[in-house]
Image (cartoon, rainbow, N blue to C red):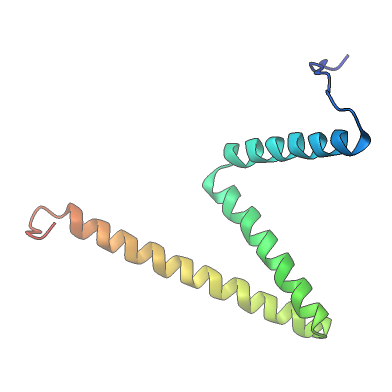
Length: 105
């Protein structure tokens, strides 16, 4: 038999209030899930949301599906290149800071 969840009485006087409280509880749950994610998982979730919005916006502007998928692939590739460049620059900067011969750091 599965685990039994704790029960908490919802103090709401109307259906609207009940729905509002349910939305607030769901938002708290989602924040908890997001806080428990690793940085890579957060980035993947953020990328997915951004890509979905980008796709919707371009579909609404009438872009053809094949053209849309090609443009999305370019977008993802450019994003990955920018992240790699940023990581490389940060690694170089950190190496300079860690260098004992560095008189400026």
